[in-house]
Image 1 (cartoon, rainbow, N blue to C red):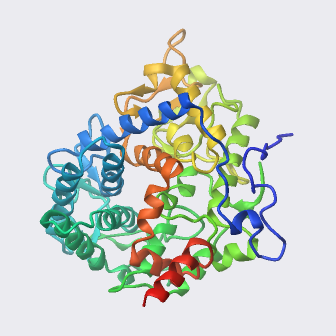
Image 2: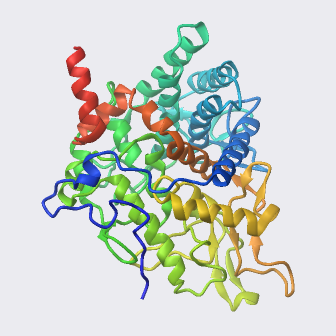
Image 3: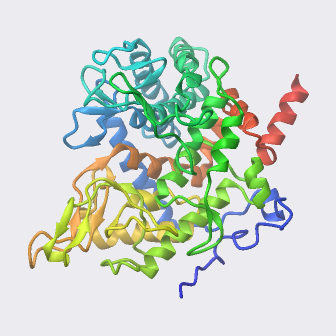
Length: 478
C-alpha cells in the first residue's frame, strides 16, 4: 500500500467542504508550505540563472528560440513564448538589464508580426494570426511540414501578453513593444479554429494539406491557457460554451492520492499555471468539487511522485527523491535486450494515471522543477538530489539536461543508465518560470494586469479570490 504524505502541504487533505464551497484554507492566501534553507535558496538562484542562460544565448541573433540545443535548426513558437517571459525574469533577477531585454523582446515580436501569413504551404509563418508549430530558425517560415498549432500559438501569446504587461514605460522602445504585442494577440482568429468534430471545442491544428485535424482539445491538459486566451479576445472570441464543453470532458480520479482532475504527464498541470494564478479562484466545475486548479496540480504532483515510489514497473532508481513523469526525451524507441527486452521510447509524453501508465523508466527534471510551487518541500529536495547525485551527467551550462533513464544501458558494464545531452526549450521554461512564481509570484502578478486574460477568466465563469478583488477594485475606479 502506498501512503501519500500530505502533512507538508497545508490545505491539501481537507480542502473540500462537501458543499462545493472553498474551505477556509482556499478562501484565504495559503501560507508557504515550505521555507527553503539558505543553501536551497542559493541552489534555486543558480538553477534559475543557468536556465535563463539557455533562453538568452540560444535565442540571440534571430530572436527565434530553437526547439532544443545543441543541434536544432528550427524554432518552436511555444519556446518563443517561454523565452519572452524568461527575459522578464532575467530583468527582475538582474541577469540582464531592462534595456537589453526590451531590445530583444522588440526584435522578436516585430519579426513575428512582420512574418508572412497566408494559406500557402510554404514561405509563410502562419495563417489567420496562428503560427506553425516549427519555424525555420533562419528564415522564420514554416519548417518540417509542421501544423498550424493552436496550443503552441497560445503559449506564444502568453509570452506576448507578459511582455505587453511588463514593458509599461513611455519610451519609444517599450511603447513599440506594447503596440506590436497587442496587434499580435488581437490578430489571432480563435473563432476560426473550432473543431470540425465537436464545436465549440477547438481543433488541435490545421495544415494546408489536410485542413483542420479531427483531434480537438478535450480532457484536462495544457489546453486550459488556449481556451482562456481565446475566450478573452476582443476581436475573435470563441463561444463561452466552449469552457463548459471542455470541463465536461474531464476525468476525476483518486488513485495514488487525493481526488483530482486527471492528466498523466505533469506538464499538463504546469503550463497554464505559469501565467495564471489559480489559487483560490474557481470555475463552475471546480466550485462543484470544492477545489481549485492550483490544489488540483498539488494533488497531481504528489500522485505522480507516489506512483514513482510504488514503482509498479520496477524501473531502476525510482523513489521519494527520484520521480517526475512528463513529456520529455527518451533513450531509444524499441526494445533494449540489456534491459530485459523492456520497451523504451524517444520523445514521449510519460505519465502516471489510473489507466495504463505511460512509463518507460525515464524521468525528467522539468517535471519536478515545474512543480515547485505545488509541492515545494519534495520538489526542491528532489532537484537538489538530482544535481548532487548525477553531477555533470545531468546538469550543464544551461541547468538540467532534459531527461535520464537508469534502466537503459547501451553496453554491459557501461556507466549507470542513459542521460540526455540536450536541453528542450519547452522543458526549460517551466523550471525557470515556476520557480520564480514560487519565490515571488512575479508572472502571476504580472498577468493579472492583462485585461484579455481577466476577460477570459470571467467568460469561463471564474470567481473568487484575487479575481473578485481585482474586479471590485476596477469597478470602483470606473
